[in-house]
Image (cartoon, rainbow, N blue to C red; front, side, top):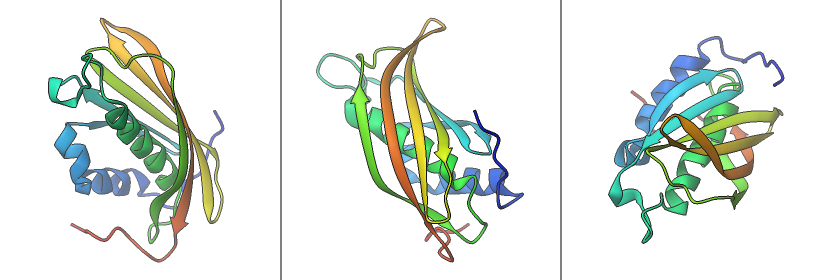
Amino acid sequence: MAAFDPADPGYEGRVRASFARQSVMELIGAELTRVAPGLVEIELPYREDLCQQHGFFHAGVTSTIADSAGGYAAYSLFPADASVLTTEYKINLLAPAAGERLRAVGRVVKPGRMLTICDVEVFAVEGGAEKLCAKLLQTLMTMHGKPDRKQD
């Protein structure tokens, strides 16, 4: 993975504060487990109410944590006065999202002044073993001079 220099030395606190304001992450019980320049991990413990009819995590839930993992990976490199907005993503569901939790790993592939490209992998974790269940490619927009709408 390429090493990136964040534009804001306080990037980790800013990422964690923004994640805490995302009510959908709280609703589904997602946890921000790692923040580094250009890399973010989000984990989601299994809950029956997050599943589809076969008992697997629903594709929408899988997509939700993948989108946020990539978004915050990009956001970690942005200036302090900027926010992030997803403009596009494509997800491939590779295997059933079956396990005791999901782990989404978002990585910046190419940072840019206006657009940043991220690669995200989602793993289903069961008994310590991980299985790749989804792969997402994402484009994010830097919203310069527009911090998050909801601030602490």
